[in-house]
Length: 416
Image 1 (spheres, rainbow, N blue to C red):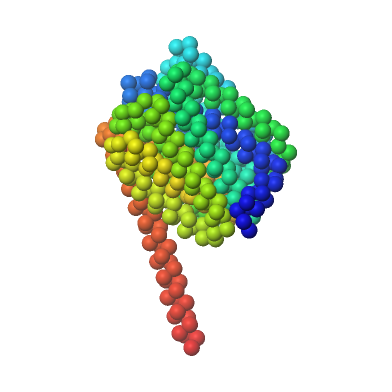
Image 2 (cartoon, rainbow, N blue to C red; image 1 turned 30 degrees about the vertical axis):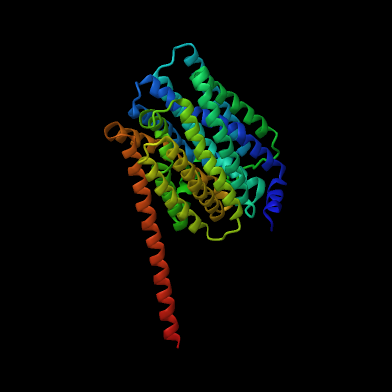
């Protein structure tokens, strides 16, 4: 099947098109909040990398704490309704922060609380969003659909990064938060007119029992356990380089918010190119291989970025990081959803969404280390951990294959 035909088949689903359209303003909200938060904390704390990490940790704590509950919500209630309500919550809290900044009343504790709320809402939202992709296209078109959502995400991330950087430079941080609030409200419009409405896959058991069932299901599945552990490490030590970008931009590369915007956009552009490759490989059966190649490549790119003192080189390296991580993203999401049974998919995605919270939590660790050794050392240490673990996984997989082949050969000899 040609790539054009694949695109047509996937986009034929009306509700998937609406979900895709909701992604554009939703990501504008995400990136505006992300860039503004780092710059706001630096401005309130005299460029403290530690406080950037602490605020990021508050966001991560909310995400980790509520993501598995988000999986239960995704299995019990209409996923569209869950998304609409939580995006409204995010819009309201970001509007409050914009007003506090505009009136000169913002304090660090305000930022901490709102970061926690934003992380909690994001954790609750993630399983429903991922589950809706599956609901609208089904299993056979899933990886293609994920690639298109990632493409929409990274196109908007790149544009939104540059836009946010210019807005902060020209109009102030409060405008970035106002933009984020309005963007989340717009994304709600597309979600509300979707017609899909899963009625829940679980019975009338308590939420606590649903949680326990989800943990038991994953505990019994070796592939799911392996995927979720890989996700924890990649989120904590890979994606968390993003948390330190404002610190690197300001203290190492000596650029302002506009330069930070372009640096963030470079990752989006690299990821966009990566999504095109992923879409072309949607029929590639060995998703595990795609996963390990992407993770290894990301680790090397992050390590090189940590050692770069030049802005132009850093732009290129961040692009390579984005390119590498997008193959990881698409492969692990597809594997988790296709391995899971229907009635457990939301809870598995809740655990997966919980691992996303390790990005800001990893940012807290990186900020703490950066406060002592500097941001480059903190980022480089994270990259080294990723490379070490991924190489160990590859060695273990190769060892398992070798033992299986030896066993097979021995069986053949005995039979002769």
